[in-house]
Image (cartoon, rainbow, N blue to C red):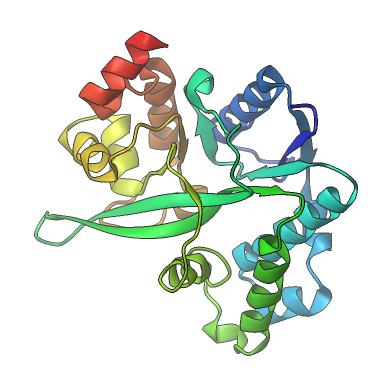
Length: 266
């Protein structure tokens, strides 16, 4: 699939060890799959129009959401038949099973957000996110997303724009009114799940896997939530690092019986 380009972006200084591991896992997977790999540093922000950077003020995530889509559009216009964006905090822990060679013209990510409430009860919510975005030639979704997201940002005051305004909130609300194609082999791991994985994986991890309902080969570890209270937990760099180690060592078995079967078959 030499006509496929995989793109990632992150800063090049003060990079956490676990983020470096994630980046290496994606590059190795892309090269093994026969894809071209491209890394973009903070120059990514240049792809966002000046008015977007000004409107979002200190909210960097919406700026990167716009920038990544414009970058993907540029690369597609340069002749790539398929472009894939993968966020820097996505770990490919079972590369032999992370297959994106289907016929879908585009794809986002299915998300099952897990939180633990004050009563220590598990709550989950289905969403759609853009941690991995796959776009091919000859379909209009990317242009539509860029137009829609920029329209949304243009009519909101800076204080009304949140970290997920141009990503998960937008795509989840869009999915409520029209079908969206999603990948089901990438899982989003909220802080309680990261903590559970850092401890070796337990009932919480297995319950998430049961509710998600699909075996995963890659995981989004939500770097933007490190050291911040979210979903009923606060996790630091050490726990992120340990969770990454557990995922790589288990290759999916940590998620329960289904993961065990897949790990034995690989």
